[in-house]
Image (tube, rainbow, N blue to C red; front, side):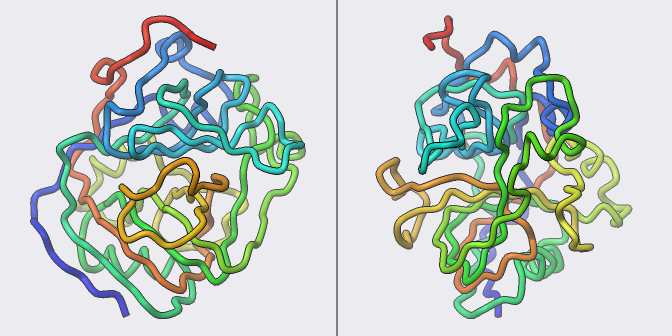
Length: 275
């Protein structure tokens, strides 16, 4: 059973760069094509990025002033993880500095699916939300792109290129988790849910029918009590995670989303490309 510790009521304003539809459609907006952002400009973030160049653009997570990505320029290597302090992106969802969580959530027993957790949290917080934390999965269903989504072609229509292995199933995995969840059927949140389409979409490989969600995992060596204790030496790889995944233990911070704003002109950037 989930336990909830309420911290505050007020929702937070989250940030974004680009939109997830840009990733799906395989293009990079002009405003992002020649910009490198510093990962220390916000608390957490995820979607698509690379600390190298757009040629290695893949699933990405930012935490502790570091951008981690699953490289797409060399998928033959055993470990595709790359990291750095600045990055390029075509779409990124951001928890800005200064945001504090509304709830702390914990679960220490097996849950049938990540989707069940999403629904239980929605019932408690009654708001779209973003979550971060640590999880142990007894069985995790994941995928990762195998080619950079920059060729102006729809990645789900060319899945042989972009998802050579659409779904992988891994056992007994510990990971940092981050994601966005919303109930698009709740008419009380029509405006914010519309804005959250910068991060949320329906994945054709996802057969669940629950809340709209989008989440990534950074697999790590061992459990940590707080994400601030995660460093590059602890990390293995990054994936998109499916809601069908089964959770054995989880500890999350939940941030209610009150609004989302374009942060492309609010984040620190690198003046010139260095790679």
